[in-house]
Length: 192
Ligand SMILES: [Zn+2]
View 1 (cartoon, helix red, strand yellow):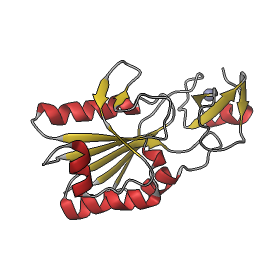
View 2 (cartoon, protein in one colour):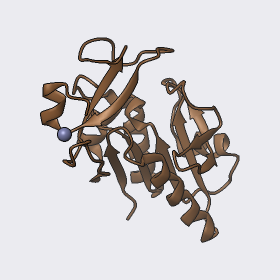
View 3 (cartoon, protein in one colour):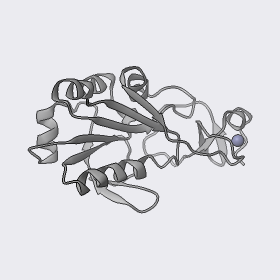
View 4 (spheres, helix red, strand yellow):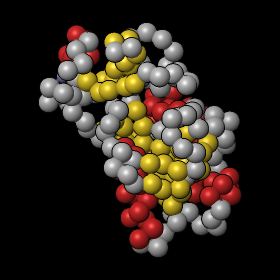
């Protein structure tokens, strides 16, 4: 039975690497797979997802007004048969898009695997993560480690060498950076 998966983690949790490896495994078995990536992520190149380990895979960039249906996915991917749909940067999906993807799982029987952040730098849900946490069949955490060795579930936004906890969820074209911290060091604002 096909399922809707949400594999979440914080920054640096190898989500894109994991996504590309799943695509590779499908392709190796002669099955068609398509990766979608949110166009909100302006830091990465369009048309490709790239991992920190140097792996690359072609993808379809989608915006908030894209409507996911089996027909639209086949047309966007240029494929007449699809075995699996992968979504990178799934935190930027709208709730409506998460429901559209769940329809593909329920009515077309195609598995959909979403990779994304659980929360933002304020420890608030992204719209896509909130909807996936509620609608997904399977939730799986991709862990990453704080500088102290504890599990790093929270994200720190760093601007001008300092951690900031207020501001807009998505900062387009900003020069801030992000790291993952454990809860204690996030609260204490200790960057290591
Ligand atoms: Zn820590």
